[in-house]
Every structure is written in structure tokens, then in C-alpha cells.
Amino acid sequence: MTTTEAVKPPIDKKALLAKYIQERDKRLRTDGNEQYLEVKGRLAHYLDDPYTPLVEREPKTDHVTFAFVGGGFAGLVTGARLVEAGVTDVRIIEKGGDFGGTWYWNRYPGAQCDTASMIYMPLLEETGHMPTEKYAHAPEILAQCQRIGTQYGLYDNALFHTEVKDLSWDEANSRWVISTNRGDRFTASFIGLGTGPLHVPKLPGIPGIESFKGHSFHTSRWDYGYTGGDPKGALMEKLADKRVAIIGTGATSVQAVPHLARACKALYVVQRTPSSVDVRANAPIDPDWFAEIATPGWQQRWLENFTANQAGGNAEVDLVQDGWTDLSRRIRAKISQLPREDMTPQKMLAAYEDSDFEKMEEIRARVDAIVENDEAAQKLKAWYRQLCKRPCFHDAYLQAFNTPGAHLVDTDGKGVERITEKGFVVGGVEYEVDCIIYASGFEVGTEYKRRAGFELTGRDGLTLSEAWAEGMRSKHGIHVHGFPNAFFVQPTQGANLISNVPHNLTEAGRTIAVTIKHALDVGARQVEVTPEAQAAWVELLLNAPGRMIGAPDCTPGYYNNEGQDPGPAARLNVGYPAGATAYFKYLDGWRNSGQFEGLAFR
Image (cartoon, rainbow, N blue to C red):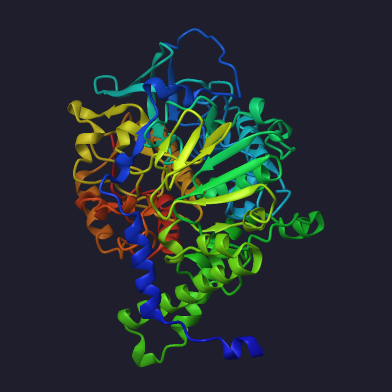
């Protein structure tokens, strides 16, 4: 123990919790998700695709074995597994101009994954790709998506710049009828849905947002024609004489701000709530080291190791060694120090909280060590538990505020008062700018139909909105009664592993491929979860401890429904009670048994 550690004062937990509540209360709003604007009507230009021109084509009126809505990781891994199983008649429908999903749209400068590339990028072993760095940047992740599409022939049947408008079950013919905004009306024996939570941009409901006379765009539609530079990080030379504001300080802004700070004449970073920003420690991946570890089955081993370290397993080693596993190691260490007689839920929770307090104190101390302006440093400190908001990891964000011309505009939790023709107003002061960039994220807490852009209509006219009116109900988060031959690819009601969502998607994709292959092999025209099996799975889920992230007493954000009561339906937004590691092991056994317990094939 060093001298510094020996004299470190104890944490005043009561005072710290009071500070957390004080900062949260500043930010509580009665309008919750309604504080954001739906991007439509006169705001619709914020959705224009600046990356790929629209290619005219004739409407499709044919039939495919499998159609998938969404061309991101979910659609790609599911399509790949189906092709591996011999089902090559796969069509992916994607509103973007290429595969990639989130990584098609997010091309802002500095964009990269926050979870290690080795476990974040899907199908690395199958495609033979070695990530170039521990946290790959967006162009490499997009290239991996395109690589999967090419290797598995998924481009052949894909429909890009196409949005599904209706999906309806045709009972008489045991198939789905799919209609799109491009005049398509085709059918599919089976469908998959992987629309994801982060694809519909939202804008802050700031008065006067339409009055600004300068240039503006959302980070998911980055305008390199205006800024100069490119997604690979080239200097945005066209901003050299520009005053630029970026509104929002979440994960996107944390990555983009360093690039803006070195390019702009003046940069105003407009903050309502600071992010917690821990060390990222990104580094190139050594090809010789990779050659040694990349033996058959390597990525699956890494996935399982990360999940075991981060989500309740008992891994002896930590292959990934990142901020997520560090947090988990600290929590386990604290709990393991408890005497046997103190191993009660209450005292284990207290030990967990102690670990979190210590970690957040370190993160706040890091701000003091890096940011030279004392006033800015105080405003950049995150006063909440680490998992109240999405944890960020970066080695240049805090340093950016030491750059001449970079200014933090803290709103003390209130947000921007209004937008004017010339700029924005905070605290009664107008800041005149040439460009406003909205780093305001994506719709998360809105209803499924609104985010998906269509309604799913199953047997006897039952809509998904009706089926889930009182909360999501499924088996494995994949199968929903009343919607035969339909499969969902997402984390909820499965592993619910939020720290590495692609692991959830790859396991779901593998499960769907095995299920469809079995249906085709036995000549079944329909596969559907029984009502009894679905009810039993939901009952099991209700024994889960609830989500680890976004507690109700947290500062508002999309993790906790903007601080508002999410309603009784949210109690079902959980995962397998025994944890992610146990769920993946269970699902593997369920798949490989060949029994498909709970499903009816007919």
C-alpha cells in the first residue's frame, strides 16, 4: 500500500448519496421521453441518408424462405447461420443504403466500439478477420458487416433503402406478407425482426429548434461535406473558421468532441449531465499474439469468458480486461471479503455499493488530474452510480477541454433554454454559432411500433402492440405466441446482457437457424411457442432480480426511462434469473437436444 492510499480519507457515504440525489433532482422532468422530438414532418430532413444515393428498382412480388427486418448485426448473424444450415433463400430488408445498422449510420469522427473488438465484432473467426485494435473504429466495424454480407451471399437478395410498412400473417398459406415503402409486396415462410434500440434518431425539444439559420445535423447523419474530414479521422479542415456547438455529452459526444476540438475555431460542448469517463487504454492488436490465440473456437471462448467475468460466472482468468470486467472484479472482491455470516442479500448489496462509490471517486479524481480549468473540471464530474448511465471509456475526451477554443457550456441540468436564428441560449446568454450538431441519441423508451415503423399482425388479426399491451411476453425473447414463424433477435427475456449486446444476437441467430432447419426437415409449415411454454417462461423471468442498470433513483436517462415510472409492463424487461452465463449454457442445451421444448411444429 502506498502512502497516498494509506492516508486516503474514508468516503462519506451519506454526503455522497445526498449529492447524488441533489444532482438527480435538478434533472428530473415531468415530460420524460416527451421532451424529445420525433423526427418527422419539417424535421424529416434530419433523416436523409448522406452516405449512399438511392438506387431505383422494380418492386418485389416474389417469395423467399426467410426475410429479416434490419441489416445490422442481428440480421447478418441470423442470415449467416441460416446459410450455414443450408437455407440460402434469405432476404434482409434495411432502411439504410448498406449493411451495418447502427454502424451504417454512425460515421461521426471518432466513432468506435466501447466493448472490446474481439467480442464485439461478430463472426470474426468465420470471416478470418483480425481486429486492428482493442476497440475498433467505425469504418472497420462497417467493413466487417460488409464482409459478412459478401461471404454469406446476403447481398444477392437484400433490399436497401427500404422500410417495411406492414407485416401480416397469412394463415391459409402459412406465410408472412410483407409490404414496404418501395411498393414491394412479397411473402416469406419465416421472418426475423432485429430493428434494434438505437436506429431512430431523436432531437431535443428545445424551443426554436427550427429557427436556426446556420447549419445543423444529427450525429448519425454526419455532414462531412460541411465539416471536411472523413470517418477515418482526417482533420475536419472546413471547420477551421467555424464556431460549432455540439448539444449532448453522452457516448457519441465523448468520442466526437476530441476531433471537433482540434478542428474548430471555437467549440461549445453543451452539457446537461456529464458522462462518467474512465480509461479506455486502446492499443493496436499484435498479429503475432493474435496468431497464437486464434485457434479453433477462439471467439466463442472469448465471448464466454467475458460474460463469465462480467455477468456472474466463475472464470479463473480475464481474457478481455476492460472497464466492464474491472467493475465486476471489484464487486466480487468486495463481496468475497465479507465474513461468512455476513453473506446476506442486504450486506452483499452494501458491498456492491461500496465498490461503486470507490470506482466513481476514482473517475471523478481522474477529471481533476486531467482538466486544467478547475471550474470546468468540477462541472465534468459525474455524480451518480456508474451504471446509472452508460459508462464511457476514453483517453482524449477530458483532455479536449485543455484545447484552446474548446468551451464547456454547462446548463446545471436544465438543458438549452432555446435555439435562436444565430445560435443557442443557456442561462440567459446567447452563444452565436455557425453550426449546431445534435448528439441527442436515439429513441429508446417509445413504443415498439413507433420505433419499428410498422405493426406486426399475427394470427386472427392479433397485433404485437395488443399482445404486449401489458408487457413483453415471449419464450427466450425469441418466440411469441400468436406469431407463428416469426423470430425476434434482441437481449430482453433472454440473457439480457447489455454490456455486450452482440453476444445475445449471435446466440439468438444460431437458435433461429437450428429451429428453421428442423421445421424444414420435418416438413412443418408452422412453428410457434405454445401458450403454456410462454407463460412458464414469463413466470420464471419474474423471479429475476431486475436490471442492474438505471435504478429509479438514478439521474435521468434512457437507462431509467428518463427518471419516470416506466409502468408495470417494465417488470418484464428482465433476463434469465440465473444470469447471462447460465442462460447461454441453458440455450445451448435446449438447441442441441433436438426436442425444441415449448415449441409446436405443425
